[in-house]
Amino acid sequence: MPEAWWRDAVIYQVYPRSFADGNGDGVGDLAGLRARLPYLAGLGVDALWLNPWYPSPMADGGYDVADYRDVAPEFGTLADAEAFVAEAHAAGLRIILDVVPNHASDRTAWFREALAAGPGSRERARFWFRPGRGDRGAEPPNDWRSIFGGPAWTRVPDGEWYLHLFAPEQPDFNWNSRDVVRDFHDVLRFWYDRGVDGVRIDSAALLVKDPDAEPDGLDPYTDRDGVHEIYRGWRKITDGYPGRMLVGEVWLPDQERFARYLRPDEMHTAFNFDFLNCAWEPHALRKVIETTLATHGPIGAPPTWVLANHDVVRPVTRYGRADTSFDLQDRRLGAHTDRALGVRRARAAALLALALPGSAYIYQGEELGLPEVEDLPDDLRQDPIWHRSGRTDPGRDGCRVPLPWSGDEPPFGFGGDPWLPQPAEWKALTVEAQDADPGSMLALYRTALALRRDHLGDGTLRWRPAPEDVLAFTRETGLTCVVNLGEGPFPLPDGEVLLSSGEPPDGELPPDTAVWLLESTATAFTGGGNA
Ligand code: GLC
Ligand code: CA
Image 1 (tube, rainbow, N blue to C red):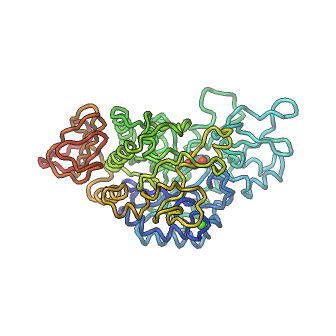
Image 2: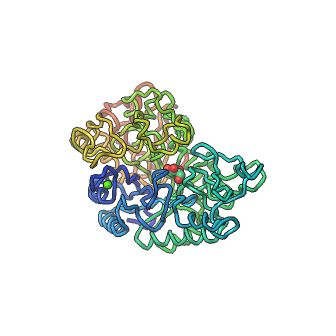
Image 3: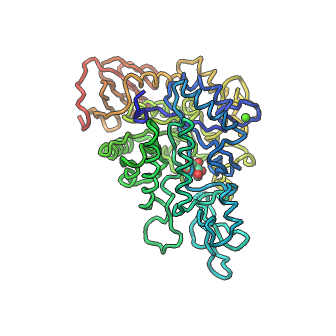
């Protein structure tokens, strides 16, 4: 594989708690994951991104890290993690780890030391401790709200308050502290030394903040200019380990600001959330694709194409709704879904995402067409969003339900009594059931990934003349992707259809369907621009 493997890699996201359970306690783990490596290699992906596997009280599904240099006992040991990395490499899979620099767990040694050391100490300066306002400091230092709901400050027994942009169990680091800067450099080296190929940077735009500043019209904690210095430091460390990469979780609506994170001395790539958020609508999709290519091209960064992750509503559910866009602030859970339509569109969306230039992400279960589970029993919900919203926003548990592997009833080969219950109808969606069905979502992903190796990847595209509600483009290899987002059939050019998201098309492409084809009269590829 080339050194800059991330430029066209397909990266499969593993949510370890819900992937496969090796010891039968109902929680996914490294033993389960290691046993399923042949499945992942067979699927045809190039790398795995693992959500946090560190020791954690799990106040936010592991994004409350108690020790950045170890593995949670429920997942295994550090030795298991090292064995896993070696086995993954032997299977041709690279490993990307999730690093969470915005906040720690309140159980981390540093936070406990900060509480013990008291106001004014160096230990407290690693976090954001402040006296309160008002009578006896009983009011929080400012009026910031937590992203999960409720105030962003919590008071400690000596009267000071600490900042947490997420749950109270997730105190924010203060990146003005040299201790914090140095410690994360050490964490990166720790994992690179153990063979890890890349790092996914959690909440990457939030690290720099100034709670003492007067409101200045800017967002007080998102995308402050100082954040880039942090990633320049990370890039220097990463460049010391050839073949390693950084991918940022940067939710920013402004593409110009987004692109700043991808300058040559910062991150290699970042998730394309504009594409993920986009409605199943031809103008909007075309605009996102064009803007993405236009912002990435000049800085030489490969775009990424993302349809799902552990924070968002599953595509087959989303695309079956009247409003097919995704909004982090309003998941619209419970909205009416036409499942058959959602599946049809999710299949077409997969062929679109995998045909575009750059790298692509697949969230576990996406390749099985799993729906969002919208009827989990309330008392089993674990997402802090559920509790912090006063049980009004069900949050993200519905896309985190353990995978169905085989058999006719739960736990569908997952193991134990799964920590979130699987719907009985997932019987039809198990890997085993889909293995036997050439028309399954799994078969579509496998075939697409195999074809992608020969025909698709890094580069550019040329738009083809097409009606407004059809997206058609040709890649360097001559492969043409046509997606019909209209209401009627679209006549296809003559040629060999390599893959269709629906029934094999007979000269015409039905609505909500995509094809990959090689035309009989090959049109020379001229790169860039519109036809
Ligand atoms: C990121 C993660 C999300 C987590 C949050 C706080 O957005 O993707 O799952 O809750 O950061 O760490
Ligand atoms: Ca387990």
